[in-house]
Length: 325
Image (cartoon, rainbow, N blue to C red; front, side):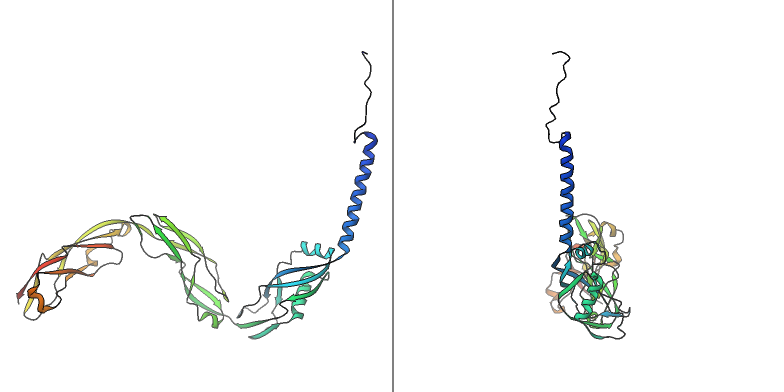
């Protein structure tokens, strides 16, 4: 009928009569959860935790001369509130054992009482430590020494064709001053980097490498720069006179030709620096008694720079005559 009002059904879960009931239910649920949570926190719990160990307070001229445990396994009983405090605490990262009382080198025992006292200080009174593993250990305190050793890069490099390493990879700095006990330092002559693998290299590069630290050693830095010096090959030729050796008091040697062409590969960056003064060519007369039956003598290089490769001599053998002085 036109103009008639449509009656409201009001039968949904959140209709006006039910909204109050839902609010009351939610409040009761929250209160129940809070009461359960508080009761759970008041209960006792047993749990285990591995705690990192660090010694502190040691005089600056002393160091630890033996391996000590890196972690201590603690079995503990705690209230739930204590566990929350433990989780929120910022001081539970490391179990710190104070060695500030030590005035001389020697063997010292970290007793269960000392370890437990340090743990109780760290956790507070809400933790009851039931068991520790290990319960005790020895600390060897020795005089600290320093030693300057070289840095040895461990690099495996594969260069592209027509490229080469101008020299072995080297570190910057090339040495480092390490600290430790005398008994440890005497066996360490260099510090190596972690291995670096490089493939298809066609240019020089500088990388950051981590240093490997032997046990019982302290390093002032954990990283170094490693330089990989790569260059491109190019060909170069030099003509040299043949140096004639002495063959006796009555004769001297003359060769035909009296010069030799040396062809070799050298890096582009060293092309201009490689000169004829770096070379010396000669002939090898061998057994003088056989000179008369020899037809040609081999040409050899008696001096050459280390930076060249693939050396070719032309001619490789030369004719000769023996002339009277």
